[in-house]
Image (cartoon, rainbow, N blue to C red; front, side, top):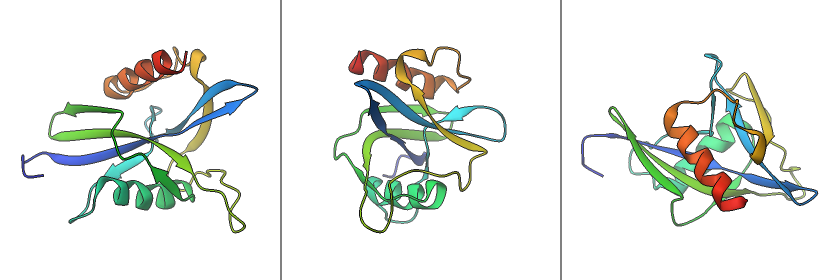
Length: 133
């Protein structure tokens, strides 16, 4: 991607509890919640970046959807949002833990209105709420 923008990917993980969708968010030191992810490095694909970032930030392996859920620009950043599944196997239980965030937490999707997020993440959260309602 040669448009001069810094490529960033963010992952969306939805987990159902009693048929109610919850979304995973990470808390930045600034007090703002975000979808975990990070910058695309070298010649990485978006899915490779997502897999690397979620291992680094949350200690879990993921499988990323091929098609992006959303896309936005913020200054020099071009952000691509992907839905993903957390892999569970005999070596890991699939529960994300905070490696680089102050906290990570699943929020009930229909109760996220008061969560402090940047405008791009808030737009994606609203889009998720429509999709999963």
